[in-house]
Image (cartoon, rainbow, N blue to C red):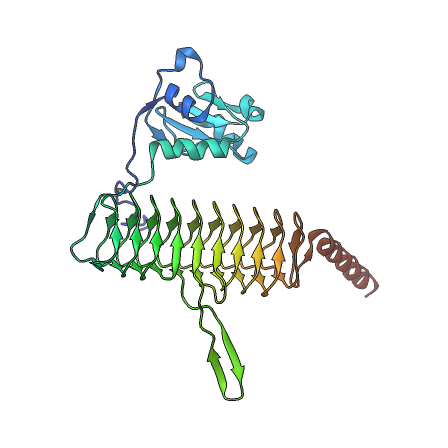
Length: 353
């Protein structure tokens, strides 16, 4: 066998242009976008694109938001770097420092400048099935094999992807992106909402009555209401309400494969990470953070600003601003004191043994 390994055909294929860009932009435009002052002599410097520190060339902009990558900063070939003031001493002379207290937020804005969200291409694909009573804004894009039910409303500049199912009387606001194979029923959506492929919105909640002869389905008579600027991840499921509505507050970010049960009420600007599950009739205040695989029993309340750790089991109300971890979950300070105590006991036991 030849000692020299054959090249991997996948890694040697040139990547297609998955991410079309705008630009170039001058540093003046970038500085204005970010609200960062740029020296007059550099206002006309052209920037072609964004790139990571170790990949950026002399016509690109990069950023640093983690001190662990200071060595990459000192060696970067980037024309400009977004960074915090504390990292200025590590910025090489070839890179123009753009100083801000929030480098990652500034990076997000400059990336959006070069790579803006895709815009709708107005029109309806010939294979789409649209009920005659549905109202589709002329500026919306309806993809192949999409189905839009009776009385549904699709807002301006909204993109409905391929094989999406929009149920009867649903309302989809303006500038929404609905990914491939999403199903939406019994739902009212605001503006600028993103739903990634495979998500299921508005199906029956897990509600049934138990009798001597088995289970009887409780009709799920509510809907799902999603406020403006919400993002919902791939394969996430949000059940409609039973006697009341399931509500997702404005600006909330929901990761992939999250389960939200019927009658759940989520506040504004919450973050719910992958594989978390929230049982029926629970509620979250504003700006609650839930880490991955956390689970909630039903009919509990999590106060605003609370933080829930990964794989936590929430079985009772959580006060506002609290940080809970473990299963059953408890205040983080108590949990880690218990862990430390167990370690001490284990060491003593080992010493005596």
